[in-house]
Image 1 (cartoon, helix red, strand yellow):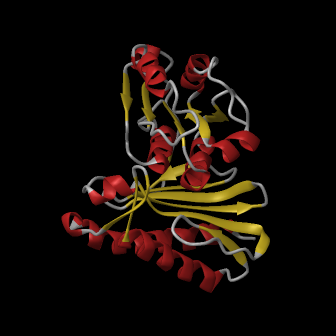
Image 2 (cartoon, rainbow, N blue to C red):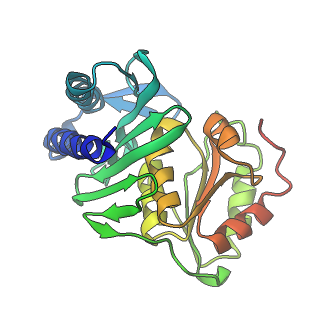
Length: 265
């Protein structure tokens, strides 16, 4: 399989979906908002973006499976599966802030290519397994920062529906008191991309794998470390969503911060 050609198709459809969503984004005050759950919003643009991406990819790869955010999964080929978040950061989107489109291709249990596209900034992050991570064609590497006092760590604000919500704000305060800064980008995919390019030294959250599959590949290909909160690998964080993506120093720091958190299996 020529995954470079597949990635080229992914980039093309991400740009199409970006153009579509930007039309809504230009009039964000008028967007109709639906509520899927606590602090979990959806808009017509989410659905339109996913439908556009589904149609494009099924026309070219009709036998591959598809899992998105807004519609039921389509199960076909057991070997290849698309993981698509048509707008990651919907709360940002409906408030006129940066959002992303995330597309990953899985072959069996590994992600072979992925992209995270930020339409408002026109930032296209791409990765092929074993071939590096790139932003608009420029190779990326994670931050080399080792001083906790200069760490810039991304996260999301926990909501009560999360399994790890108890004690979440105390943990956040403990992290914040020891590092240079903690920031909330509002998009898990974008946060991973920020780690890959060194804007964040690390990122932690409890979130969905569809949101982060492409971003995780970006970080790994940029030289970063990805585990769950207790240092365990993909078998765990893909299932539970409790993940750390970071450079080595920030990863070690966060593992130490979370060592007493009850394990999520």
